[in-house]
Amino acid sequence: MKRTLILNANIVNEGRIFEGDLLIEDDRITRIDGDLASFPSDNVIDAKGMFLLPGIIDDQVHFREPGLTHKATIYTESRAAVAGGVTSFMEMPNTVPNALTQKLLEEKYELASKSSIANYSFYMGASNDNLEEVLKTNPKNVCGVKIFMGSSTGNMLVDDISVLENIFSKSAAIIATHCEDEATVRSNTAVYHQKYGDDMPIRYHPEIRSVEACYKSSSLAVELAKRYHSRLHVLHISTAKELSLFDNSKPLHEKKITAEACIHHMWFSDKDYDQKGTLIKWNPAVKASSDRDAIFEAVKNGTIDVVATDHAPHTLEEKNNNYWKAPSGGPLIQHTLVAMLEFHLNGKLGIEEVVEKMCHNPAILFRVKERGFIREGYFADLVLVDLNTPWTVSKSNILAKCGWSPFEGQTFRSKVVNTWVSGQNVYSNGKIMEGNSGHRLTFHE
Image 1 (cartoon, one colour):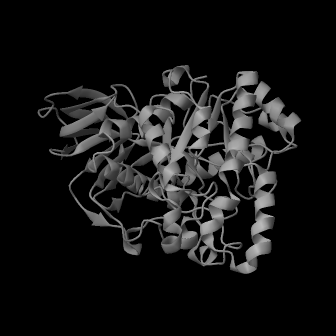
Image 2 (tube, rainbow, N blue to C red):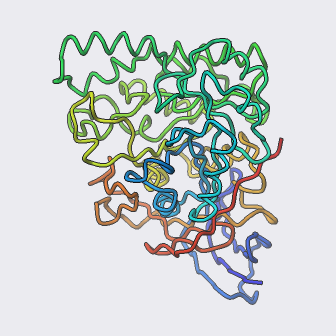
Image 3 (cartoon, rainbow, N blue to C red):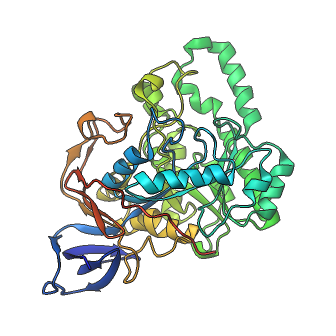
């Protein structure tokens, strides 16, 4: 049995911060106590002054494999994940081919089993014509069903209301939605293309992927979920208007309708387009500072339940195109935890709130088995952070395969020191410990 002992850490868990020691035996946390220093161990880490958090569970990433591996692979992006304290990820089905059959979905799990350094799950994709396959999804070992209620790669736009009704009424798995009304986006696109042609300024992106497009689609998803008593999780909320659709009067485990915010909608606003250009082109779009501030407040007050990345890398060559040709999305997984800790250091969030939104709540919402908390008997998915070691994001320290970040030039005051995945120290002081350690996530029904 391999033992790792972490001493003198400030342990952040379930709303508390307390100094203590933690023992890992093989893949599990076996002891949490005030004095384990004399316990025989293979590896001892003195974490005095540092903070030990549960590993981050990121419920929305795009790792691009199979079919788009010039942008990213499960191997490269899982390395970036653990460098950012993310120990588990849930990946989207808009790879090539789209994961629209159970066979194609299982092929992605097989790829991850051979290459992922982090724990993994993959969403089953929905289209207008694969209902039978969608309803075969096993909620015990698949994180959920993803519906693009707006443009996506390949054949993944679901705009047939009868298909939506069937999924919402019959799916045993949680339904995760990308909500932008396709007709509204197309109408806005025609207007702006006629006005600007190929010289369309990036700053009008939030006028095309508009507040109205988001609200119309999100409100439809929520209406369907209420009608059919579905478990619905609306991804990457980008507008203040959508917040009226969600409720913070119940504890998370009692909610059937939940919402996610992503770091880019909490950090950037439309004022950043002139400087960042297409590097911050996302769908849904980064919108006004009033939207950003409302989203931040909704994260704090529990209207929004989870903070994630929507890590979606493209090459710089692809991004350095005009507005119409530049794809939406960007790499974020390595820097989201330190960005959230920057909010903490600025006095805007408690570190306990960071852990709640990025660790505990994804585990509760998705019913992840034995992860997301620092508890005896749970898997040892852990991240040790130093809140007083400034560093600056540069091309030399970016691990995503695409080699760039919208945070380049940003100095963060906190740093990930160590990351453990199922008891294995996979990242230590800037170095990846090679060898896949990730497990397939499993879920309570």
